[in-house]
Image (cartoon, rainbow, N blue to C red; front, side, top):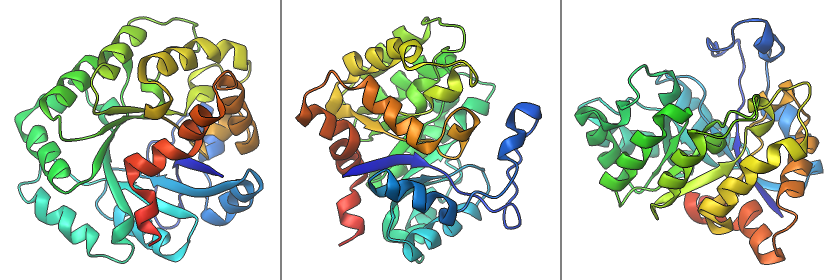
Length: 284
C-alpha cells in the first residue's frame, strides 16, 4: 500500500496553465487527467493520493475538490486561496462546505514565484497562515533555496501550523551543488512542525541524464534532517514525465530509501502522508 502525496491534473479546455511556457515545458502543454493517472497509479500499487493546486486562481480549488468527491483515488486536496484576503477564515470555511470539501487538507501558494524572499513573513501573509492553522489545515511550501530561511522563520512563528516542504525545497541537483540548500533544509527540519516531500527530484536534476546515484546526496540530506516519520513520497506527476515515467519515479524513490527498515519505509510511503494530511478521515 502506497500513498502518492503530490500530483496534479489539468484540462486545458477548463483551466489554462500559464506557467507552462518555453520549449523545455512544451511536453506538458496538453491535458493530463485523472483518467490518465489512475491506471498508472493502480499499477504501481498506489491506494490514495493528494491532489495539489497548480495555478493561483480561485476557481481551481473548487474544481479539484469536485474531482476528489467523484474519485475515491484522491483522498486529499492541497488547494489555493489568497492568504492575504481579509476574509480568509470565511473563505476556508466556504471551501470546506463545497462538494468534496472534506478532502481539503492544505493550502499552497506559488511562493517560488515571489520576488521577495521574505514574502511568507509579511504581516498580511502571516494572518493568512494563522487562519490556515486555525482551520486545522497544513501549509505546503513550494520554494527555492534562497527562500528557505524565511520558511524556517515562518514555521518558528507559527508552531501550531504544519509546514510541508514540497520537492525537497528544490535543490540544485542539475549542477550537483548542495549549498545554501542543505543548510536551509537542516534549519527548517530542526523545527518539529515541518515535514518534507520526497518529490520532484528527477526534474530538478538534468531530465536527460539524471541517475539515482546522482540524486542520492539530496535524498540522504532530507532523510537525515527530517527522518522517515517526517518524510513522504510524492510523484509530482505529470511534471515528472519530463524526465521519467510514473513507475520510474516510484522505483527511484524506493531505491533511494532502500537502506531503511521496513517500518521506516512504511512511514515514507504511507504513514507520514496519512498522518499529516489526515487522509483516513477523508474516506470515513
